[in-house]
Length: 360
Image (tube, rainbow, N blue to C red; front, side, top):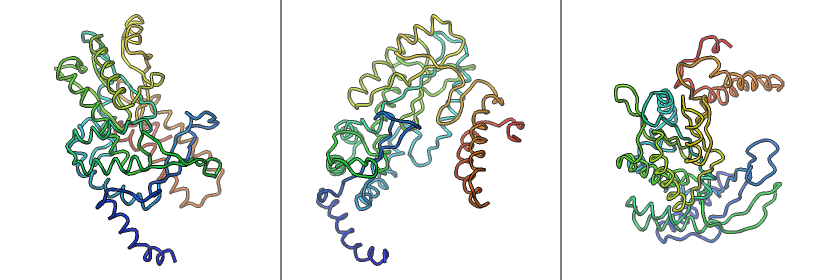
């Protein structure tokens, strides 16, 4: 029955999609979406403790998927190599490898000391300014027709919020890209590349100096995985002021505000006075090693049991809860493959786990 219905509707759907690309407009309410609020943790009771996910209808997603498939081919050629998220043949473990190597150089003696700075963007996908996105696409050289398609998609969106299983309200919105739309990650990477290129420009102008290592080794200045930003530089005040200025300019232009509460900087062998001065300049507090980056602990030196024990503990806790559930052997195998393997995969790419912990 479903197959027959799709056959009957197929021609109308194709005509509707083709009409958008020929005439650059969407049928009314074709781009209507339901917003589902997903709690970030148990007991969430404030609006900022929920993650909004937009559920688009399948007909609009065909248009979005066609554009995304074209953009996927182009994006890796124009987005800076420092961005490792959502792009073909770029991998999350590359970010973790670079970050791990840089952390091992934090205690190398150099003028001003070495810093790793972890920036957090407040509701990154939800606050992206549309005018900034369109200007970025034009600057990258996309045709006016493609930019107009993007504008139509952005401004035609209507939202309804799903509360306790019922839809409430029906309204437009004026900024942000929807999580769940195949175009959104690519748009975000293109927009954030403005910040990445700004950091590279500071380096070329010697206003931001990368971390030094033995034998003249220098780390990359920054790595990005979507909105997870990690910057490696010297702790000179002039460097940090230039970084602050760039962050503020980017925030003003793009709407991407830095969440100072979640930002941290990391250093080794710095005095309390030095850390206090760094905190006053940057506007946020120092963190301590080890810390978690993209789900993997980062620390100095060789991996030891205490560094990776938290991952092992989380796995044991999950296994304990599954014992109480009546599952077939295949059900248990599927849970291990889909959940346990994903918890281990990235850390296995980076670290050789201690044999005693593997046996556990």
